[in-house]
Length: 491
Image 1: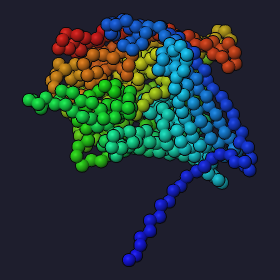
Image 2: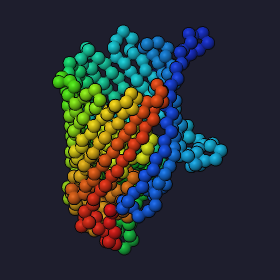
Image 3: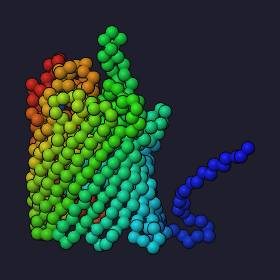
Image 4: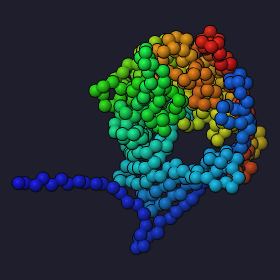
């Protein structure tokens, strides 16, 4: 009898130093942030303090330590540790008396190398990945740390190509099978004199067991009465393309896959750029489209987002005007969502520092939303105002309004078919209440908000910066839309 031999091939890379090898030069740098802030909601929620889990005044800190090991110009490794965020006095974050806490995290850990005799650069490992954004400087789709491989090639001094494979999630469910999310992207950055543009496309395969759910049904009626996620640890804020923008407490009314489908399909395309030919005038734009196909129409989502910025730089101030528009849900819960899906838009949105995920440090934010999906708005700002050396200011005023149909809000509150199984993917809060200060508010066409903010920065030493910010957000919600069966409403 013939024996069949199976050959297993494994490919890997090792980077390090041995006793006989030349020494590797290690360099360290870091960032220390100490922050204290006071914030309080008026009518957003009937409670004391900032939100349901934080006091009105809090002090906190964060330390980031980066170690770079360079073997040569063509080979290096980086590890990036983060200690915190630590709220002073909080035991589980190492801030209580004694200050002992297991709060050291590996934020990034990657290897950089250049393919020999070429201009192809490879980065592999835990790394920061941000899709292009020229207006807000923060992608509304993906801007976060993720495990993957990035390859960058320059055709010439004007045109390059970037290819990406990232694995945001895998092996996080109980059975650890078909729960992976694998994302692929191609970016074509082009830079010419006075003009830059980056077209890009992306595709992600989402395993059918990645965001499943368990349902409890009424034994008499068969209607769903409660549900829980099987993988709550990975269904965090804005992490799930099925229920983008909703909190981990969202109750699914069933798995977002129908029988026979192993993977869902997540598509993206974008065209971003800027024109600086008329310097000091600058015009920038972002245009994105995304769609998620699950095989179950009620769980599908597809939408688009555009933004534009015009600004004029002078010696002492850069005034600018900007605006954005994103598609929102229609009034039919059975045909899925018309909002653009998002993996994790965690970058600092330069349009808004307080209302929508823009604080560059560790202050509290996201009063309106973590991203701009499902809203439209306009804003004006005066950036980098400076009369004294080392001291600068930025003043901004923003207007927000939702693009979601008011009928969809009635599914959230339970006024339109309280037991309708199709409303769960749209619910931000199981009891229909608002979660101000959390993942964000679900704004309809009848809901609006205004943000006013002043940020001040003082560079006292070369490596010491002081930052002070004051913000105010006022929101108005439509009473007819949001009044629940119990008569409660936000605002």
